[in-house]
Length: 310
Ligand SMILES: Nc1nc2c(ncn2[C@@H]2O[C@H](COP(=O)(O)OP(=O)(O)OP(=O)(O)O)[C@@H](O)[C@H]2O)c(=O)[nH]1
Image 1 (cartoon, rainbow, N blue to C red):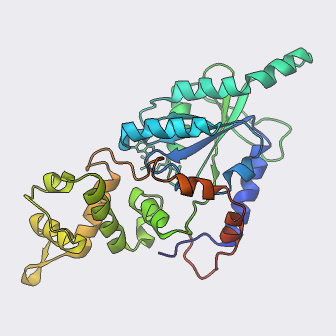
Image 2 (image 1 turned 180 degrees about the vertical axis):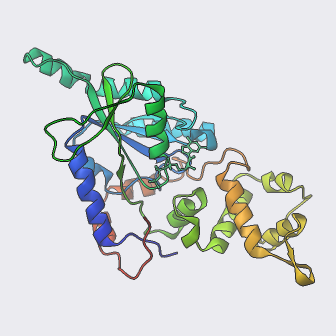
């Protein structure tokens, strides 16, 4: 699957994020709890640099809770504060705001010592497409006081959302590209919804889902589709599921396209249960690779013929 951002788009996204970063004290990095590595931007460390950062594992309601706990430990061991959240229901958000304030507290104290009046901690959300940035901002906005007015002194008018006491969130998120250089990463992102359906090649994604379920969550597809057993071969399994669901065309032929779409929709919607696609214990090597400098080159060398993900 060759899905990639245009290098020009990546540069623009990076520029926009860099501008926003100047306005905030801390970054709330949103990742998908089901695939916390593949849903991170590979250049995150380089882009954010020395700002305090809190990793929020969103959509935790869709991920395997046992594995999410391991991810939290994994990030903390790396020196990054991390918390699981559910941006739709608001679970974990008060804790996230409190944690963000805690991360910036030493700076506020230092300001107070210099005689500068303490002010609210300002944060921004940063993440790849579809990871839940808008949901998180909306949820935080709903819970609290209305937006404050434009802040004078910044070139571009920015709106801030007051969240509780002494905490403000920039009302527009920073969007960065995911990493695509690996086929498996692309499939994981596609399966979980980071890539728009319209530009998806649905067959390989559906096959990927069936293989994943057979490897990690045996028996789930069988019970979901009321089948005693499923063929080992993923294509045959898909055909059996389509037949069982009555997705048939003229001549009793299974409508494969409808079945692929069904599998993708149900997987994304959590109908197969809480599934994690990445486990920190199995992916140690990839984690190390993520911060290698050659990553930058791979991203910037993306060819313009490739499809763009907005
Ligand atoms: N189950 C579940 N779904 C979520 C959660 N957060 C967001 N979603 C869903 O994920 C999808 C994407 O959410 P958005 O908030 O639009 O994501 P975004 O990062 O702003 O997306 P872009 O605008 O494409 O950058 C929506 O269908 C949300 O309803 C969550 O915590 N749990």
